[in-house]
Amino acid sequence: MKHIFKLLVLLPLFAAVACDDLLEPAIENNRDINAMENDPTYAQGILVNAYLLLPYNTSPTSDVATDDAVSNDNTNTWRVMATGAWTSQNDPASQWKNCFNAIQYINLFLEHLNHVTFARDENIQAMFLDRFRGEALGLRAVFMYHLLRAHGGKSADGELLGVPIKLTSEGIGSDFNLPRNTYAECMEQLLQDCNEAIELLPLDYKSHTADEIPANYTSMGISVSQYDRVNGQFMAGRMSGRIVEAVRAQALLMAASPAFEASGITWEEAANNAGTVLNRIDGVNGVDADGYTWYCNTSEIASLGNGVNPQEIIWRASYGDSNTLEGDNFPPSLYGNGRVNPTQNLVDAFPMANGYPIDNSNSGYDANNPYENRDPRLATYIITNGSTAGSATITTGSYGTNNDAINRESGHSTRTGYYLRKHLRFDCNLDPNYNTQQRHYSARIRYTEIFLDYAEAANEAWGPKGQGSFGFSAYDVIKAIRTRAGVGVDNGDPYLEACANSQDQMRELIRNERRLELCFENIRFYDLRRWNANLTEAAQGVNITRAANGTLTYTPIQVEERSYQSYMVYGPIPYNDVLNFGFVQNQGWQ
Image: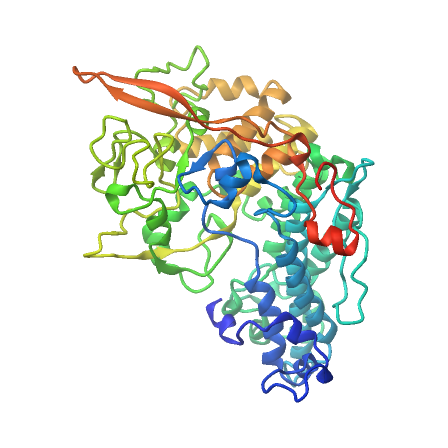
């Protein structure tokens, strides 16, 4: 997808909507928006601006505002927010400006699209118009989803509100005082955009066969080569039908959740839409055996072509060589800043390898040897005391002799007794004498997330073993994911079997599996809130000391309190927009 962004540099938003007579004389190269109708490259550049504003983040930013992690950076905005400074004027979770700017570009593009000539051939032109409209609508659905996730909420009178629905571009004469639409109305518009986009877009951008050409195009006499001219492999990475189906599934799960259930969306709707995505990869048979380590599957990453996705990935950003994540998060002895510190809370959430939670009497957990015989994902995602990172052994206990040890004054050491391993490539070398980089990419949507979406919704709709019309259940999904991780494989996973007899127990297990599989992917902050779960659980750590005889003692410590109020299940509308445009604020926020 890299070549797309070479089309145009980011166009200033207000220049795009400005009238010719606003500046006298006109500034050179400040092209009127109508110029896109005579320049298809310029027109595509308007849409590219929406791609550039996609609200996805490679770094695990929001996780440090949950019970999963803290940051050792005093200035981290999410840390500051979580410890009592979250206001409508200080909201690092806000998507308001970014998403509405993107929607402005999308609406401008849609308004002029039918007047842009992309091809002289009438049939090719029709396909271009369909695809570009599908892309724009799919993108608009993405931004609406992120707006609702960040700003949807209940007003003081208990009404569940969304955001203003904007289907036309705004200019000088626009009414900026439009009220917030209801959450249900926003979801209706999101689903309408998704459904139309799916009808217009190819499932994937690839080399197609004749039987994969839609019937309406076949009836026009479109050949395979003509179809691929518009929808071929070279467009991979842009919004596709498969991606839109996944976004629709994400949005429906959110809307069916306890905090948003007044939307009218049902768990069955959420399950059916996630199941549609998964049926395309043969259900649980499509679980990628190495999907939970997508970020460090080095041979797979090295062989990626432009726009090509690994089996685990539905949508990803472009790849590139870097070591920024490593610089932020490697332990100090590896020349890193150790910024994201996993909590004891998260460590305790990983079960034993036999599948039992560590507080279950059948688990075999040894508090004096807490990392032994644990779920293999613990060692995969988190650096614990005495574990190896690259070629180094990392000592986080207070008896350590370097800045890897807990709470050293360097400001780069762990506050919890743990360092991050997930997302990082330990074949990067930050030693200034080498400073090697490796290929990384950001996974925007993974199949594992959609599997867990399905499991959650299916359990609520049909119970642990109900299959709907898909031939697999919540139980089947969790069984496949735990088996992939190496949990319960030697004993038949009796804990899972017990949970399969209770919807409530299965719900807790699904939520925990979601916590583990998706940790440090900027998801838990939103999961806790849509579940109406406890936001105030303090972040815990462990202080490990060593006696003269070498015996280690593990002492729990409280690292950071979480200062959230009950109304913070819903995020705020930005203060200035409430003040200037009269938007109804969500309950509790000023």
